[in-house]
Length: 362
Image 1 (cartoon, rainbow, N blue to C red):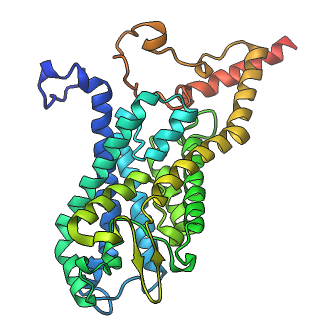
Image 2 (cartoon, one colour; image 1 turned 90 degrees about the horizontal axis):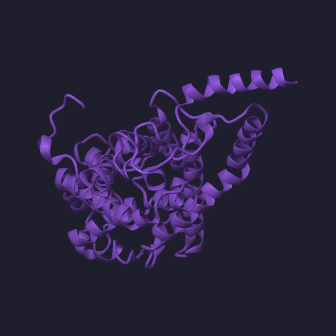
Image 3 (cartoon, rainbow, N blue to C red; image 1 turned 90 degrees about the vertical axis):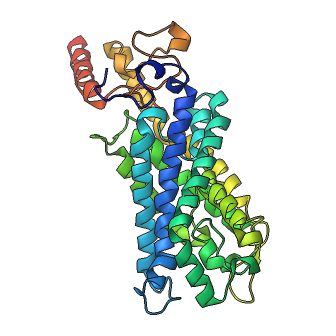
C-alpha cells in the first residue's frame, strides 16, 4: 500500500471509487486541466496581453504568427499536463472522440462511452469557468475598447477564448470546416494510437503525454486557422455552453455570426462535435489498416516460428478469467496500454530470444 494517507480515510477508499466512478473523476479533472490552460493561453493572447499594456494598443491581437505559436504551444502543454494528471486512472482520454475511437478499435467498454463523455464535457465547462473567473476583467476591458458588448452578438474575439469558429474564407459553408475537423482529428488519433502502441516505437520514460501534446501542436500549426482546431467535442461544447450562459448569446449557441467583412457562419455548433467523432474513427482505422495489422502479423509470425511471446498475448481480465489477485474488477492497471501489451523493456529481450530460437531451429 502507498504511504500517502487517502483523503477519504482508510476505510472509504474501496468501493465505487475504484471502478467507473473513479475513472469519471479522472476524466473530469483531466479535461478541467486541459481547458484551464488551453482556454487560458487564448485568454492571454486575446485579452490579457492587450489589456495589460504588453501590445501596441489595447485592442491589438494576432498581429503576427507569434500569437498563433503561443496558442498552439500553450494548448500542447495543456494536453500534456492533462494526460499526466489523469493517465494513471482512466487513460486520460479527455476527448469524446478518443473515447469513441477506443471503443471502436481498442476494446474500450461501450457502456462507459456516454459516462466518459459527460465527465469530459462537465470538466471542460468548469475549466472554462475558471478561465473566465481569472480573466473576466480583461475580457470586459477588451470588449469595451472594441465597442463589442457580449450582449450585442458581435464580441467574436472574446468569445474565441472559449470555443471555435470557421474562417471567413469558407463563406458560411459547412463543408470546408467539417472536412477540416475530420482531417485534423484523424491525424490526432493516428498519432495517439501510434505513440501508445508498444508494438511500434512507443515513447518511453513516461514521455507519451508530452509527445501527444506535440501532436496537438502539429495539428494546430498545420490546420488550426481553418476552424480553430477544436478536434475535441468536449473542448468546444463545454466552453461554448459556458459562453452562452455568460452572455455571448447566439455567437456561442447556436453559433451564428454575420459580418460585412470577415467570418460568417450560421448554427455552427455541431461541426466541432460531429467532425471530430468521424475523424477519430477514421484515424484509428487507417492506423490499424496500414500499421497495426502489419505489426500484428509480424508478431504472429515470430510466435509461429519461435513459440508464444507472453507479452504479445492479450492480458486476462477479471471479466474473462475471474478475479485477478490484487486487481479490482473494472479498473486499469498502471502498466496496461490500449494495445494490451506489457512494458516495452520486457518485450525487447523476449523478441531477441525468439529470434535466437528461430535460428537454432533452422
